Image 1 (cartoon, protein in one colour):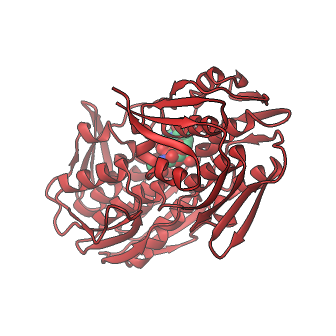
Image 2: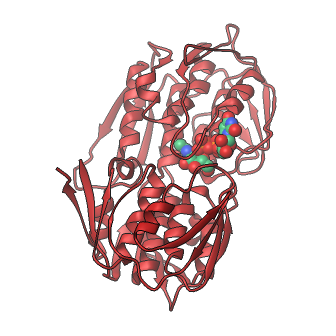
Image 3: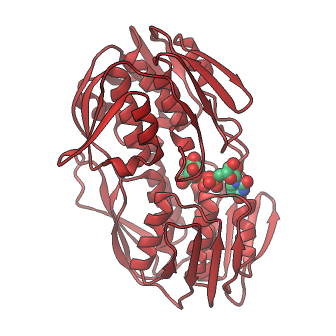
Amino acid sequence: MDQIRIVGGRTLKGRLPISGAKNAALTLLPAALLTDEPLTLRNLPRLADVDTFGHLLNQLGASTQVQGSRPEDFGRVMTVSAGRITSTTAPYDIVRKMRASILVLGPMLAREGVATVSQPGGCAIGNRPIDLHLKGLEALGAEIELTSGYVRAKAPKGLVGGHVNFPMVSVGATENVLMAACLARGETVIDNAAREPEIVDLATCLVAMGADISGIGTERLVIQGKDRLHGATYAVMADRIEAGSYACAAAIAGGEIVLGGANKALLGASLGILEEAGVAFADTPQGLSVQRKNGLHAVTASTAPWPGFPTDMQAQLMALMTKAEGASLLTETIFENRYMHVPELARMGADISVRGRSAVVRGVAALTGAPVMATDLRASMSLVIAGLAAEGETRVNRVYHLDRGYERLEEKLQAVGADIERVSGD
Ligand code: UD1
């Protein structure tokens, strides 16, 4: 199996492009099921998860066409045409590979009146139930049964608008219900909706497809259902988590990099925390410039739904704080098991103690390279970040996690001067 090999100690300089956002792509792709006309998505990242989603859409009867992309280009354009949905079942084999498959449930149910989706299990970062997705769809009139590991949903007379008040903020549940409501009869109100930029991206695309949505970007979404949506062309937003990850890379390695296609606003709460840690940002015509001014300082950060500090940045910030002066306090409030990177960072010399949901990270003078592996995407990225600053060689195993969420990571980091390569692990 491939590994990423990094020799730490190089400062970074130059520009690297930020790709389209994985988490936006994975909710825009199922939106294509809401119409029988083509939906063309530009700036889709080239990622394993996007390919898997394409296969899922094919399995449901949609065609996917990739246009004019050369191997050397980042990103691509894909047109999804779901003229007819020939199967309403998302099978176990695909859902087990990618939890975001659950996002076909709402659109398929809304369009076909029936949908069967394998229940996603837990994953490396926690239980990850889907009860809020199901309750939300039930509020729109869906009848749902859980049998043999599958969610079987039907709405023989079509979905009808309703009031959904989520007891906690869920990105995926908001997306599923929002998509379904676009084709439900009458008005749907979603309270305590997630406000993540990827949801704004989805809602904006749905409006381009003819949906009537107000309150976009707020915790109350109001949707007037339509009989049908039409095709559209839409460009996926830039990946704020990828941008934040490379900002951490530049901050730990030193030097100055420019993140093409990114700006300060994209980073949300990560910006203020990284500034507090001693990282300087500037919006420039070429993109977001990132530079560590002097030493790194410890910070306190707690993950929260947008506009809070994202759980998807917690591991990368932790890697950065292993080299900061002082003790940082990081608290994970979204997922119960999202510290799998801690023992691996410790093997590289980091001083981290976890108690319950909080971790105290005491900065050390030096990290040392080591063979490491992680069980999820962002944890794997935290090991890459630590490796860039570690003395000697780090080999990150289980590269398939990184391939799910970082488009050609090693090429982007090589381009700004990192000593990093993909090697065959055999
Ligand atoms: C999405 C992102 C993921 C990110 C997460 C939080 C995608 C493909 N994934 O995941 O990268 O880390 O948002 O920003 O976009 N919950 C329930 N019941 C539910 C749904 C969620 O209890 O039905 C809980 C979860 O266990 C978790 C919290 O709600 O504690 C937030 O989860 P949610 O926002 O739904 O995350 P995802 O949409 O799965």
